[in-house]
Image 1 (cartoon, protein in one colour):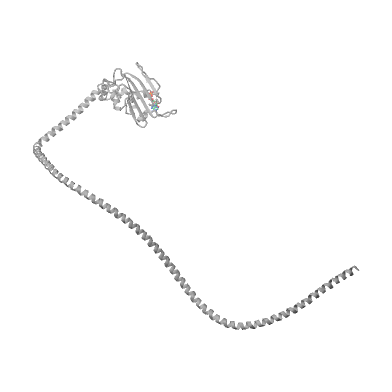
Image 2: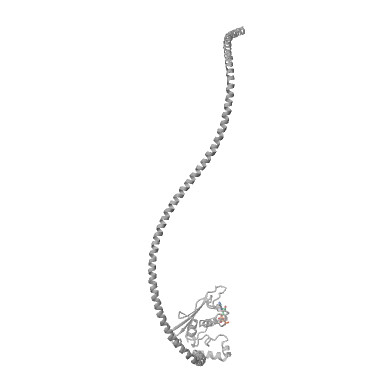
Length: 392
Ligand code: ATP
């Protein structure tokens, strides 16, 4: 088998995509301890379907993904592709001259497998490598300490390794499968023989039962015929019943239509009565309002009449009092008239005296006036004399 190339990306110490092209001669990978040489053989074993994290020198499968360094962040998935030459058809099921097997693994735990970029199952990858000498448990990959392991392995495990190398593991597996099937078939055969012996014991009772069953079948057929004729009769009766029911139904429909029309008319009439009732109610309401208004007015008038009656009684009393007062006044008026006549006479007398007094007063006034005029003349004469005296 000729491994043509190995592509590694995000696997262990290979964060970047790294392609190793193997020449036709021997390829040796050399480097100091811890530089990543074994990671390359791990990558080959991993892409061929290795499921044990321990077998890949890790604690869990996620450890195969580049976990980051001080200078680089970790990556999300690891992917390895192994390209194998198939010009000599070492993979008989593959027609292509080159077979590329890819495995991808995400941190989420999701795995993907591809053969020539076609998505496949792990089983397909395992079967592809079976008997090519490249099986993951084969001798083709011999890691550190593997030789010791092979030499100290139990004879069965050693045989497994050599059988895979010789390409007969597939046939051994098939043989084991066939042997298991044969064993199961033999067990089934024993069970079937037991069953046959059991069944043989049941043959006579089963024969009776079969007779009974035959009879039952004949009777069942008869019963079925009878049932059918009974059903046919019932069917005729039912049909006649249905026709009658249909006629009744139509008659009932016509009656229902009439009743509906009558009901509609009654509803219309009812509505008219309702409207009239409403009008009457409104009228009654109006009349009730009028009555209560009239009652209020009557009450008001009654109280006004009571007030008036009181006033009349009071006025009557007043009239009586006034008339008695008037009588009194009349009496007093008589005496007053006499007094007035007396006074009038007295007044006339006084008036005569006043007129006389006035005339005398007038004469006196006249005298006073002329005396004043004379006094004024004497004063101006005195002033003239005082003026002359001052000059002298
Ligand atoms: P030795 O000579 O001891 O066998 P080696 O050259 O084969 O060493 P490997 O064992 O292949 O080296 O590689 C070990 C290196 O791979 C270590 O430096 C380790 O830190 C690194 N390594 C392994 N797994 C991861 C990972 N998931 N992420 C980053 N680096 C990893």
